[in-house]
Length: 263
Image (cartoon, rainbow, N blue to C red):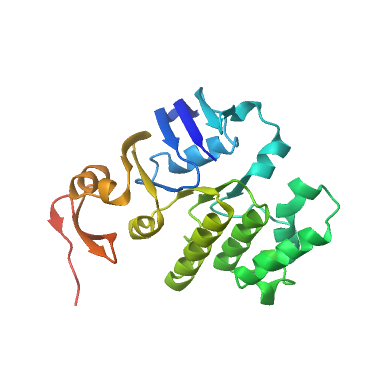
Protein backbone atom coordinates (compact mmCIF):
# COMPACT_ATOMS: atom_id res chain seq x y z
CA UNK A 1 0.00 0.00 0.00
CA UNK A 2 1.32 3.41 -0.98
CA UNK A 3 0.84 6.17 1.59
CA UNK A 4 0.80 9.81 0.50
CA UNK A 5 0.63 12.38 3.32
CA UNK A 6 0.08 15.97 2.24
CA UNK A 7 0.28 19.15 4.36
CA UNK A 8 -0.68 17.31 7.55
CA UNK A 9 -1.13 19.29 10.77
CA UNK A 10 -2.37 17.95 14.09
CA UNK A 11 -2.86 19.50 17.52
CA UNK A 12 -3.78 18.25 20.95
CA UNK A 13 -5.52 20.83 23.17
CA UNK A 14 -3.05 23.66 23.66
CA UNK A 15 -0.20 21.94 21.80
CA UNK A 16 0.56 21.58 18.11
CA UNK A 17 2.19 18.21 17.44
CA UNK A 18 2.55 17.90 13.65
CA UNK A 19 3.59 20.75 11.36
CA UNK A 20 2.98 20.49 7.61
CA UNK A 21 3.99 16.84 7.15
CA UNK A 22 4.56 15.91 3.51
CA UNK A 23 5.86 12.45 2.74
CA UNK A 24 5.32 9.47 0.46
CA UNK A 25 5.85 5.94 1.76
CA UNK A 26 6.23 3.51 -1.11
CA UNK A 27 4.40 0.21 -1.52
CA UNK A 28 5.91 -2.96 0.01
CA UNK A 29 8.41 -1.06 2.15
CA UNK A 30 9.27 -1.21 5.84
CA UNK A 31 9.33 2.41 6.99
CA UNK A 32 10.57 3.28 10.48
CA UNK A 33 9.61 6.53 12.18
CA UNK A 34 12.32 7.69 14.57
CA UNK A 35 12.90 10.77 16.68
CA UNK A 36 12.93 11.98 20.28
CA UNK A 37 9.97 11.58 22.63
CA UNK A 38 7.15 13.92 21.66
CA UNK A 39 8.34 14.43 18.09
CA UNK A 40 5.05 13.18 16.60
CA UNK A 41 5.85 9.60 15.58
CA UNK A 42 2.86 7.88 17.19
CA UNK A 43 0.57 10.73 16.15
CA UNK A 44 1.40 10.14 12.47
CA UNK A 45 0.56 6.44 12.84
CA UNK A 46 -2.75 7.25 14.56
CA UNK A 47 -3.64 9.74 11.83
CA UNK A 48 -2.98 7.13 9.14
CA UNK A 49 -5.21 4.69 11.06
CA UNK A 50 -7.86 7.46 11.39
CA UNK A 51 -7.80 7.20 15.17
CA UNK A 52 -7.01 10.92 15.17
CA UNK A 53 -8.49 13.58 12.89
CA UNK A 54 -5.90 16.04 11.53
CA UNK A 55 -6.39 19.80 11.77
CA UNK A 56 -5.68 19.97 8.06
CA UNK A 57 -4.10 17.97 5.28
CA UNK A 58 -4.78 14.75 3.42
CA UNK A 59 -3.79 11.12 3.74
CA UNK A 60 -4.10 9.03 0.58
CA UNK A 61 -3.97 5.24 0.76
CA UNK A 62 -3.35 3.84 -2.71
CA UNK A 63 -4.77 7.11 -4.01
CA UNK A 64 -7.94 7.03 -1.88
CA UNK A 65 -8.73 9.59 0.81
CA UNK A 66 -8.50 7.79 4.14
CA UNK A 67 -11.17 10.04 5.69
CA UNK A 68 -13.68 8.84 3.08
CA UNK A 69 -13.06 5.13 3.66
CA UNK A 70 -15.50 3.04 5.68
CA UNK A 71 -14.17 1.57 8.93
CA UNK A 72 -14.79 -2.00 7.73
CA UNK A 73 -12.75 -1.32 4.58
CA UNK A 74 -9.96 0.23 6.66
CA UNK A 75 -9.98 -2.81 8.96
CA UNK A 76 -9.57 -5.16 6.00
CA UNK A 77 -6.61 -3.21 4.67
CA UNK A 78 -4.81 -1.98 7.82
CA UNK A 79 -3.56 -3.91 10.84
CA UNK A 80 -2.70 -1.72 13.84
CA UNK A 81 -0.66 -2.62 16.92
CA UNK A 82 -0.76 0.05 19.67
CA UNK A 83 1.92 0.63 22.28
CA UNK A 84 -0.22 -1.11 24.89
CA UNK A 85 -3.42 -3.11 24.93
CA UNK A 86 -6.81 -1.63 25.76
CA UNK A 87 -8.31 -5.10 26.22
CA UNK A 88 -9.58 -5.22 29.80
CA UNK A 89 -12.07 -8.06 29.53
CA UNK A 90 -11.13 -11.70 30.01
CA UNK A 91 -10.56 -13.63 26.79
CA UNK A 92 -8.13 -16.25 25.56
CA UNK A 93 -5.08 -15.61 23.41
CA UNK A 94 -6.70 -17.64 20.63
CA UNK A 95 -9.81 -15.44 20.64
CA UNK A 96 -7.76 -12.24 20.66
CA UNK A 97 -5.90 -13.35 17.54
CA UNK A 98 -9.18 -14.51 15.98
CA UNK A 99 -10.44 -10.92 16.33
CA UNK A 100 -8.06 -10.11 13.50
CA UNK A 101 -10.29 -12.11 11.16
CA UNK A 102 -13.47 -10.17 12.06
CA UNK A 103 -13.31 -7.69 9.18
CA UNK A 104 -13.24 -10.62 6.74
CA UNK A 105 -15.76 -12.93 8.38
CA UNK A 106 -18.05 -10.74 10.48
CA UNK A 107 -19.18 -12.74 13.54
CA UNK A 108 -19.12 -16.17 11.92
CA UNK A 109 -15.60 -17.62 11.79
CA UNK A 110 -14.88 -20.19 9.09
CA UNK A 111 -12.38 -23.04 9.15
CA UNK A 112 -10.19 -20.88 6.93
CA UNK A 113 -10.16 -18.23 9.67
CA UNK A 114 -9.34 -20.85 12.30
CA UNK A 115 -6.50 -22.25 10.19
CA UNK A 116 -5.04 -18.76 9.65
CA UNK A 117 -5.08 -18.11 13.41
CA UNK A 118 -3.41 -21.45 14.15
CA UNK A 119 -0.70 -20.76 11.58
CA UNK A 120 0.00 -17.32 13.07
CA UNK A 121 0.10 -18.70 16.62
CA UNK A 122 2.64 -21.30 15.54
CA UNK A 123 4.65 -18.72 13.59
CA UNK A 124 4.97 -16.47 16.65
CA UNK A 125 5.46 -19.44 19.02
CA UNK A 126 2.26 -18.67 20.92
CA UNK A 127 0.56 -22.04 20.57
CA UNK A 128 1.52 -23.10 24.10
CA UNK A 129 -0.36 -20.15 25.61
CA UNK A 130 -3.26 -20.10 23.13
CA UNK A 131 -5.84 -20.97 25.81
CA UNK A 132 -4.45 -18.70 28.51
CA UNK A 133 -6.25 -15.49 29.47
CA UNK A 134 -4.79 -12.51 27.64
CA UNK A 135 -5.01 -10.16 30.62
CA UNK A 136 -2.86 -12.52 32.71
CA UNK A 137 0.08 -12.48 30.32
CA UNK A 138 3.29 -10.51 30.72
CA UNK A 139 3.70 -7.27 28.78
CA UNK A 140 6.01 -8.95 26.27
CA UNK A 141 3.59 -11.82 25.70
CA UNK A 142 0.69 -9.42 25.21
CA UNK A 143 2.72 -7.49 22.67
CA UNK A 144 3.38 -10.63 20.64
CA UNK A 145 -0.32 -11.55 20.76
CA UNK A 146 -1.33 -8.11 19.46
CA UNK A 147 1.17 -8.47 16.62
CA UNK A 148 -0.33 -11.90 15.87
CA UNK A 149 -3.83 -10.38 15.79
CA UNK A 150 -2.73 -7.74 13.27
CA UNK A 151 -0.95 -10.32 11.10
CA UNK A 152 -4.05 -12.54 11.13
CA UNK A 153 -5.91 -9.75 9.35
CA UNK A 154 -3.67 -10.32 6.31
CA UNK A 155 -3.69 -6.55 5.79
CA UNK A 156 -2.05 -4.57 3.03
CA UNK A 157 -0.51 -2.24 5.62
CA UNK A 158 0.81 -2.93 9.13
CA UNK A 159 1.00 0.02 11.52
CA UNK A 160 3.17 -0.83 14.52
CA UNK A 161 3.68 1.56 17.44
CA UNK A 162 6.85 0.44 19.25
CA UNK A 163 6.16 -3.27 18.57
CA UNK A 164 9.24 -4.56 20.40
CA UNK A 165 9.41 -2.18 23.38
CA UNK A 166 8.40 -4.86 25.93
CA UNK A 167 10.52 -7.65 24.43
CA UNK A 168 13.98 -8.86 25.34
CA UNK A 169 16.70 -8.64 22.71
CA UNK A 170 16.23 -12.24 21.49
CA UNK A 171 12.48 -11.84 21.02
CA UNK A 172 13.03 -8.44 19.37
CA UNK A 173 15.10 -10.12 16.67
CA UNK A 174 12.63 -13.01 16.37
CA UNK A 175 9.65 -10.68 15.93
CA UNK A 176 11.42 -8.39 13.47
CA UNK A 177 12.61 -11.34 11.38
CA UNK A 178 9.07 -12.78 11.36
CA UNK A 179 7.56 -9.43 10.39
CA UNK A 180 10.14 -8.98 7.60
CA UNK A 181 9.52 -12.47 6.18
CA UNK A 182 5.73 -12.01 6.47
CA UNK A 183 5.88 -8.65 4.70
CA UNK A 184 7.94 -10.08 1.85
CA UNK A 185 5.66 -13.11 1.51
CA UNK A 186 2.43 -11.08 1.51
CA UNK A 187 3.85 -8.07 -0.37
CA UNK A 188 2.72 -5.79 2.46
CA UNK A 189 3.80 -2.35 3.64
CA UNK A 190 4.85 -1.56 7.21
CA UNK A 191 5.07 1.72 9.09
CA UNK A 192 6.48 1.36 12.58
CA UNK A 193 7.51 3.64 15.40
CA UNK A 194 10.91 2.58 16.73
CA UNK A 195 13.10 4.01 19.49
CA UNK A 196 15.95 1.54 19.01
CA UNK A 197 17.91 3.13 16.17
CA UNK A 198 20.03 0.03 15.57
CA UNK A 199 16.89 -2.07 15.17
CA UNK A 200 15.52 0.49 12.71
CA UNK A 201 18.81 0.54 10.79
CA UNK A 202 18.85 -3.24 10.54
CA UNK A 203 15.31 -3.78 9.24
CA UNK A 204 14.03 -0.58 7.61
CA UNK A 205 13.99 0.08 3.90
CA UNK A 206 13.37 3.74 4.64
CA UNK A 207 13.78 5.97 7.70
CA UNK A 208 11.74 9.08 8.52
CA UNK A 209 13.43 11.15 11.23
CA UNK A 210 11.25 13.64 13.10
CA UNK A 211 12.05 16.57 15.36
CA UNK A 212 9.48 18.89 16.97
CA UNK A 213 6.66 17.60 14.79
CA UNK A 214 8.50 18.12 11.51
CA UNK A 215 10.32 15.77 9.15
CA UNK A 216 14.02 16.49 9.48
CA UNK A 217 15.39 13.71 7.26
CA UNK A 218 14.13 10.86 5.08
CA UNK A 219 15.96 8.17 3.18
CA UNK A 220 17.82 4.91 3.53
CA UNK A 221 19.27 4.15 6.99
CA UNK A 222 22.81 4.99 5.90
CA UNK A 223 21.59 8.33 4.53
CA UNK A 224 19.63 9.36 7.63
CA UNK A 225 21.76 7.98 10.47
CA UNK A 226 24.69 10.36 10.21
CA UNK A 227 26.69 11.98 13.00
CA UNK A 228 25.32 15.39 12.02
CA UNK A 229 21.66 14.30 12.02
CA UNK A 230 21.95 12.49 15.35
CA UNK A 231 23.70 15.48 16.91
CA UNK A 232 20.98 17.89 15.79
CA UNK A 233 17.90 15.73 16.40
CA UNK A 234 18.95 13.88 19.57
CA UNK A 235 21.65 16.24 20.90
CA UNK A 236 23.96 13.23 21.07
CA UNK A 237 27.46 12.60 19.80
CA UNK A 238 27.53 9.15 18.19
CA UNK A 239 29.93 6.89 16.37
CA UNK A 240 28.58 5.44 13.12
CA UNK A 241 29.82 2.03 12.07
CA UNK A 242 28.80 -0.92 9.94
CA UNK A 243 28.03 -4.55 10.71
CA UNK A 244 27.07 -6.97 7.93
CA UNK A 245 26.41 -4.02 5.61
CA UNK A 246 24.02 -2.43 8.12
CA UNK A 247 24.53 0.89 9.88
CA UNK A 248 25.31 0.73 13.59
CA UNK A 249 24.98 3.63 16.03
CA UNK A 250 26.98 3.90 19.25
CA UNK A 251 26.05 6.85 21.52
CA UNK A 252 29.18 8.44 22.96
CA UNK A 253 28.23 11.70 24.67
CA UNK A 254 25.37 14.11 25.26
CA UNK A 255 25.51 17.91 25.23
CA UNK A 256 29.24 17.80 24.62
CA UNK A 257 29.98 15.93 27.87
CA UNK A 258 31.55 12.50 27.92
CA UNK A 259 29.46 9.83 29.59
CA UNK A 260 30.68 8.85 33.04
CA UNK A 261 31.16 5.19 33.89
CA UNK A 262 31.15 4.02 37.48
CA UNK A 263 33.36 1.39 39.05
